[in-house]
Length: 85
Image: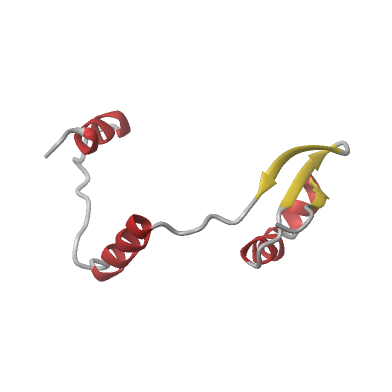
């Protein structure tokens, strides 16, 4: 990995799209507050399951919707996904 580029919070807000392009190219970006790094942006390598999810999501676009009465909480959904099938 290349050495991290350090930017302040204000610059990160202004140039987020450009910084993300640099991250996608393999650079790390550190965001600093008052000259002290507090966060690091790094590229996430896609996983096989993530790629399958994105492909499935794209193929279902416009074919499904979530009703206004959908009442599951994030915790309930996580529990359902964690249970063995």
